[in-house]
Length: 179
Image 1 (tube, rainbow, N blue to C red):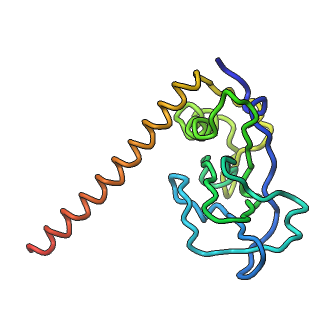
Image 2: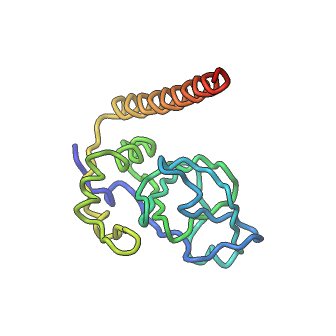
């Protein structure tokens, strides 16, 4: 079954704030995520309570969709408390009980979705996709059991990639010590 993205989620822009080194709320920016969409908060930025006029605190299961630069989706796992997303992100909250947030993020990162983005991305200094184009993105929704299986398969693939990379690094270190 196919549904349009905005029929299965509630969407809200992140706050249009610039981060500071001090403040009450950690604010997530695109640079806090690697190319795979994995959270890696290397340069903490914060904001104050005024940002909550424009957005809300993130909750576990929210999908952060990066609209600018590297376009990706990732499920927020509550890695840090009381965080907000900046305007780089569209925050998606799944409202359809037949769609898993993890599956939706997986689909939004899929080759099929990336082909759609390529057709609708506006090229400028920084590539970006608009909310209007995302509203009508068709999303394939398999039964819950298949969604769970796909999410689990993806986790196993990511683990295999990580372990393979670690193994290659160890082999290179051994080679370099032998030379």
